[in-house]
Image (cartoon, rainbow, N blue to C red; front, side, top):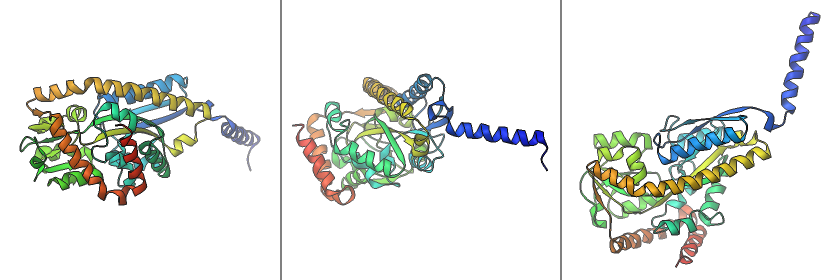
Amino acid sequence: MLSRRALFGACACALAFAALDVLPAEAREMRGRLGHVFATNSPVDQASQEFARLIKERSNGEIDISVFPNSQLGGDETLGRELARGSLELAFLNPGSLTGLDPLLDIHYLPYIVDDFAEADKVFYNENGILQKTLRETLRKHRMEPLGFFELEFRSVTNSRRPVEKIADLQGLKLRVPGSAGIKGFFAAAGSQPITMPFPELFTALQQGTVDGQDNGPSITYNSRLFEAQKFMTTTNHVYAMGTIVAGDRFWSRLGDEQRAMIRDTAAEVSRKQIENNRALNKEFLARIAAGGVQVTELSPETLKEFAEFGRAQWDGLGKIYGEERVKLLRAEIADLD
């Protein structure tokens, strides 16, 4: 039989836990993890660190987020699955690498949707456009809440066999690509051998010759040191890549309305700054890659037009993956750019 003191203690504990249950979400201190695959101190990592710092500051220390860069918590697909399970709170993701979860998550990887940053701003960062609408709906379907969109870059081609100066030069190259149907289809049509593998495995694959090359752009190629295992780089600009800041549903459901609004506003602010920073550094990253001994080829406008016409011709076979109506709506958005 419980003593009076023990009984009193048990009641006190029960009351304490009951009190915690009725505390508003804003009054609870929460700790969480944020993961991403990008190199430490890269533009994306800097943005993620700023995001975590601002959330802690603006929540008066109630939400404390620790950042794990450079694939410390796994590749994008692993991060996506952990977010969906509720075992990870936040991530800066490349949705184009989440096709194992859903093929719609790389609809923005159709080749040559846009030709420059001005067009990218109108199509990719349009909240009412088909790209963001599809990504938001699909992420939510997989228990991830999209908070904002940031820039990865225009993708390029690097390899260790030969310069790529025309489409025919892609023939026979073994290229690591993300699991995107659009990117794989583009390179397969050009005669390359597209090979998918998780990003954390890429550098070793380049060193060992498992693949000849890869298709990330200047920022990722430089900051992840991929250029150290390559001889040639061409700014093909075949895909404009966009990332997304996401929260897992389990974490998101624990937040109050004011906390959610603050986090959304912070994500939008950090994304805008990251885009500006990334673009300002684009030419610098190319120069550093060249200084590292890589032969960099920047295609002429005429040659880029040939690449773009070839790439857009591959869209016709992708409606069965992304939906004919979505592809039609995207074509209409692009037509409005002219």
